[in-house]
Length: 351
Figure 1: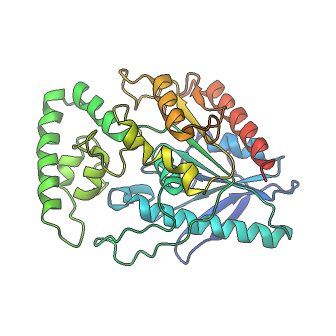
Figure 2: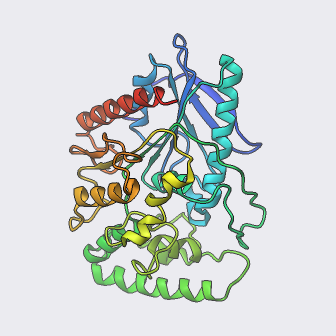
Figure 3: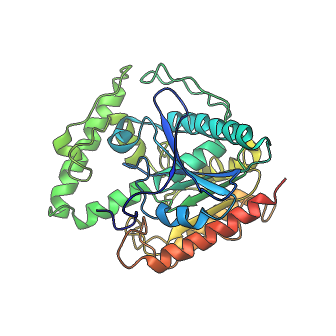
């Protein structure tokens, strides 16, 4: 039984935003809710799998905001063959559906829509805001993907944006799953060489890496392609980071300029970007200066226009673990909910 979700569930509506992908809206029987918070989970997440969203749903029940959770093609155990262009194209389709649905329901186009990403969902949020609109890439391994025009959103929140590369390096230093550091490093080194050999062949389709090797860090039942492995582990960083390597502490300002530094130029965000790192995130190595990293991101995002992109509510969530799912996280979840509610209230005022 869930520790966070009430027995009997919470009311809502299941929407199809494509023929095969769905989003679930938590609804209130009494409140008028023209505004929408679209929540995007991290690797392995799907519909309603991030526990603290239960706190957000309860807090929003008496406001004009409803929370949507969605599934993507890359949800659950499919993230190992996913990529950010497809994720954000699907998020765009969901956002467009929500905006049209709320406009039809309330007879007004004034409803706000805010994106909120957790963990790798933060990579999706930043990719959505910083890349060309629509995307311009042609993926040989995903030939049926059709890029769509991404709608402008009224706000964006990133919670627990972490570097997968630095998290893996931390594991390599300390060992994992009962294996020593030397054991994990040996297999991971072989895996990196294998992945690079596969990608160099330039095949039109993805090739899955051996599960017995990837399971040294990831789940045994999660297939991971050589391409996605290299995007996340990014062995050529910081000189030439993979697509997923957005939040590492050693990235140059020039590299950050292609992500954080492009948000204002793309014009897809009406309000500001709020970034909330977990204060005791177990996925962040202890050598990372979180406050210093936030300051670097802020500097690049705002550029010469102080406060133009970066929201003043950004910072560390006191005492919070990565997903705020530990038994001692009640106060951290309360703090997070308060910060999100304040941000949404400010977003309502933006024209």
